Amino acid sequence: MPRVALISDTHIPSRKETIPEWVVEAVEAADYTIHAGDFDSDAAFERVREIAGETLTACAGNTDPPTLGLPDVATLDVEGVRFVVTHGTGDPDTYKERVAGIAAEHGEGTVIGVSGHTHRVHDEVVDGVRLLNPGSATGAAPALTTTMLVVDVEGDHIAVSRVEGCLHLSGRFLRDAGEQQVWNCSRCPTSPRCVRATTSPRS
Image (cartoon, rainbow, N blue to C red; front, side):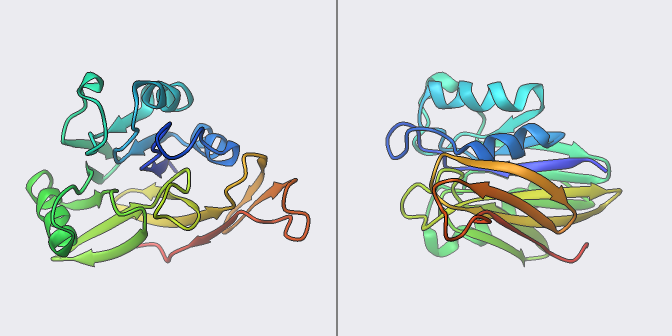
């Protein structure tokens, strides 16, 4: 089944220097990649495009330079699922409702709204639309850790895995064994499995 890597808010170089290696490897292992904005620079965009290849779908964030030429809303169709990608810039009090409305406007059937901006992971249904926010793929403040989401698509159903890791750059992808995705970090000797993945029930 196709796998979609969801990342966002890399903020390179203003808040972080580079993307952790375990995130790079997870993106390279996916069939499609979505970035929900705030690359922060042309160099960061080019780096993500380098590791994602032609499968990258991305939208503009509020810190992205106009030279990137990214749309405010982007879409990706995978089997029977449409992903609608928007950064989520605006009033934080109406953030979820705003993203849900944009997603509903740009798709029908099984529609997933993907957004960033808050640097906090969420997976919930708002106004009948499932919303996914992968957090920050570099752990950029105000994030407390490095996170991404991995979505496996089968027809019009999805299974979402939250992948969370340390902020070190030495984490290496070891294996993907269904729900037990395990990485290893040489800088975390007391917690060698410092990158963890949890999978939600298929919906």
